[in-house]
Length: 462
Image 1 (cartoon, one colour):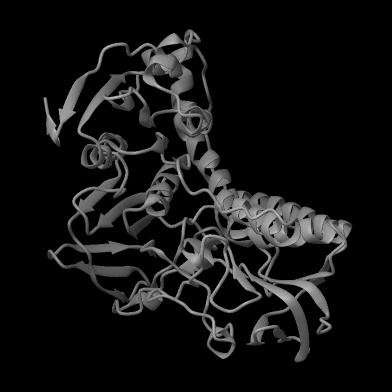
Image 2 (image 1 turned 90 degrees about the horizontal axis):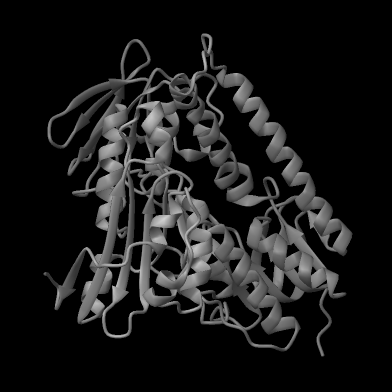
């Protein structure tokens, strides 16, 4: 039997890597985990957590306005960008400390260095140029925003990484992209008082989401004053004499803004990782190819999370980590379950969704029942806002099984988590109908839509 320095060596200190390392170490395995930047990964340091904090910050403007309808008189409000950035930094530093503490308590060795593969079981630590060996190597290096280097002037743009720490809040911004990151940041910047434009090559924002959610959010965003340019792309960006960005689009739009943000997808962090040396296979996007148990083509090397480009969500990376531990260290082969993943877009209003969109379900099933409700939420009756909540249930007519539920409205993300349990359990529309409503709530609409709004048969709306 060959002797290894470690039972498990984890490359990457994000959510998936930390969970794997902590669990294995707690089992008594000799574990090391290497991270070259900060523990917590994209989610904690430059993703989900700071984003949600900024979403909260950006909502207060509307809260102050809405208060008048409920009898409150609110004085002049002033927003301090630097205070928000400092508060965010304090919180993510606290969370990083908890990640480190969890690893240390479990007995894992923490290595603040870049780690590079030099063979199937060997890793080079860049900080000391030391070679170490491990029986199992887990790659959990995540991803980063696509730089879009073919765009003239891309070096003048920022990505979501830099957006959290700008030295000053811009007066205007152009965001390129139509995915959830672009949409969320468009709402954040607009809510903080920035003149915001979104440009997207597709016909509608948020591809792969249900069309009612896409169109409903588009309408709500434009109603707030966010300009959305669809079916157009950036042509080039140059810096003007005043330091502002002068932008041309393919359709001939000319815009002058303080900042341009690129939110045009993410790519796996696999460059200069030594994958070629170790013989690890990657796909055309650079993602590590794995089987159902997160095994690469090289025995002893595994990969989880965004670096595999399966489903780029933090809870998915954590789930894959737990499945890896079950399979490799507890002798219980467990494949990650990527079906029926609840998802939220923290736009304003939010989108919460689980299961199939109407369009996807119509292609997969002969006949559907679609239940749809659109209404003005109760809070808006006194605040005077015209925003609408949209709820939609997609049902297989043959067995009444609920295939998908989609919500656009306040706290839709919270609803999606609980709806995920119901759909995972295989609930039918009859189960929804038998459930008592909680009144007065928006969510009660989900259990009081007794008659289908319309049917779809063989792809045709009836």
